[in-house]
Length: 292
Image (cartoon, rainbow, N blue to C red; front, top):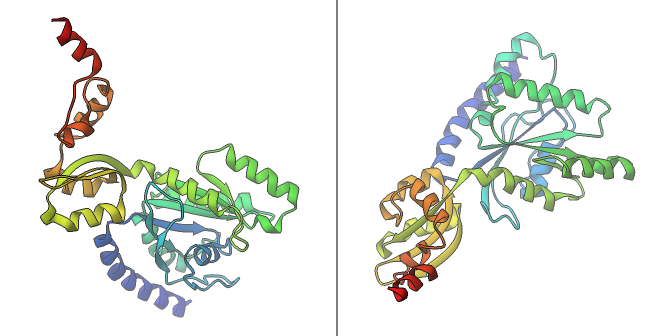
């Protein structure tokens, strides 16, 4: 136990350093959480080829592995940081509780939690509740949580199909096999759904001298429209709120409320056309002028 506590203290120091570097990337952070042996490291390996330790043993992952991942087919946020964390267990020895909770700082800093559940375990529902309880205790249960029913390859075809159906009928749930890769396409779609609320619409005219800002938009956002004009690059995109605030000086809309209002009045005002410098009035306005 003493050796384990020393390892945990060292992990905390490493995380503090790594977290500063991740903050600079502005990429969303997804933390894999779950009961021990649920298959978190295997899922991380499947998605990133990270080579994280994936052994069937208690506390196999103490130093969380974080990898930059480009999720295939994900349009909301193509690139994310995916972090593996220590597995949860029940009835942890009292003298380890504080140290164990300290390792969950990554979870508190994450934007989205990916709760991996080993559905091949006969007590998986009990384990799922235990993890949810810990998340509530560390005040992380209010984050978007994607529930991954893992190891369906170990179930009968009937049970696996039932879990797929159950997941499809509920929000932010998906059934997968981190060993075979079955269900990972649905996993990406579910993660994209969870991240959709993290982005905000922006409409910008960015000077050509600020090319680094365009690079950041492409890296962490989803560009819908782009056009190169005389004064700069016109872009209509979805980006993290922190980046939207930084780019506010280039906005063609005064604030987010104005952007929402412009969408409501889309029949009369074409904001995209305004940004491109060739706004035309809506058809009913033109007809009214002709009548006058």
